[in-house]
Length: 287
Image (tube, rainbow, N blue to C red; front, side):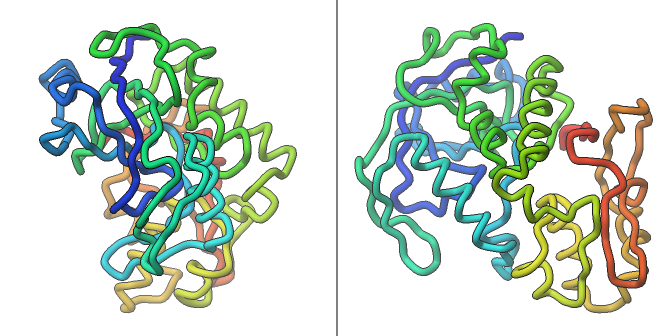
């Protein structure tokens, strides 16, 4: 299970980190060109090596989604963000009202990333660790389950502060571990799981339901928010909207391959949205 290791440091001043994205600066900027073997999507980065990470396999509640900066219930969105930064080593983070970071203590914290590629936005899809790396920067290492357990990705799932959201590029052994950790947090009703209504049903009466009330899988939030922002059709037509989307995935428990979230999302009573499969049972195709 080889993954490229890049050593560097986290510096979030001037950015708007949330529970699953954070800025990281490589000690050697040229190592970003090694991501994906040089033939995949490029990681966008500054001349000094600063890039944005998208944490692999986890999805935290949104703090500022889309052009309208829509958010999910901020209690859990902020809890994930704050826990991520604290775990990485930031002891004090100062912010403006728009959530931009103005100062941190310390200014930077050392760490490393393990990666196999970038997303369509140029963000490095990564397992993110702190402190000394478990290998040599610029080379691939064996990404084992014990290594996974040293990352903030694993920590957020264990604490119940993020949902598992899996893509096909993630190694099966790592996915299995992360699913087990997430299910354990859900069974213990830790963090957001005490309020989660992804599979039991989210009553949607307007935009405010999504931003301030219901706790659901962020991918479901984003699709539902996109639909409500159209303001043209009743919620009962939402599955038809999903059928026209580009989400492609497999249902792990059945082996079915599907195109469109309408296969696993239903609307009942005209206003209640729910997923018919738990998040860890879905394996999405890489965009």
